[in-house]
Image (cartoon, rainbow, N blue to C red; front, side, top):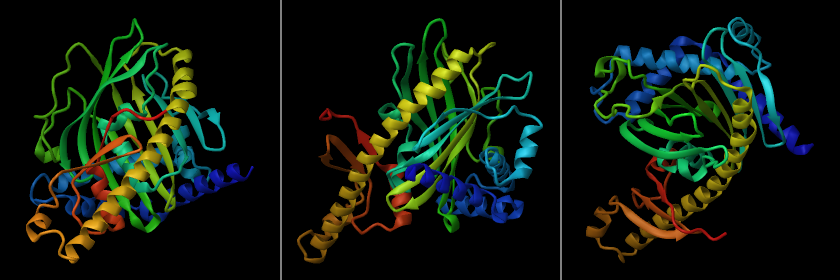
Length: 363
């Protein structure tokens, strides 16, 4: 009962944050997005113009409305949602997370899934694990019967800090052909409420992409070969609960390119895949926490050694070079990190650069 009470409190706090006037005000959102783009772009003139800012602002506003669609505190959002969508159906509900599903507007191929809950891990570690497509094989369920496996996941282009394009390919059970998604990630931070929002929107094959309208080009995106590309609009929100605990809400509206989606497939995804994925995600969070702690200790130790003159000044200048650290619980770590104590904000950005390489883990 105590855990159920806590998760309800976390959910209500996120609902309250999403309902705040600042996140409903168009001009305030535009300023937030513009600041994010300027802060994360080395060359402030590259890929930034009014069209890009307005496009990102509209995408953020739409996603915030999606996040509010389950909020009991936002009657206005619920009424607007009910006009075009079916009601949310509860698929799972326990002391750690819940899963909801709803069909899209009648006559459309869309289906929506929402999962929210809390995990034992700081926001920066959760963010790293969620954003790095190279880590998806570590925590996305790899089901054999029926087949659902990640067979390829890679970053195609890092547009700027907090924005990237990745390709994820999945193998499904016969007679379904493989599916893949070209996903555009865009991160927005609202430090006032300890909130981070990450948009995950697929890039359509028919979409005309250029620097003026999108802030990036489509040169890094390969042609689809012997695979069906799906459409996804969604993302997730992360909110700090304590330094060691985070609350998340993930929502996605998908067109998986099937004329008919059987209820059995929806139940398999919402009741089995998501549950297994949540447990694997929690496990990866725990490894990530231990790895981040080791990085901090290493950085602090190197700073102390430099102060004592043990490390040469020449060596200190190359501290930002890529390093391989000793494994932590069977996980080898590579990171680009300066040898100074990291602030919370630096942790957030540097965690994007961390890669956990798969090695043999003790069972």
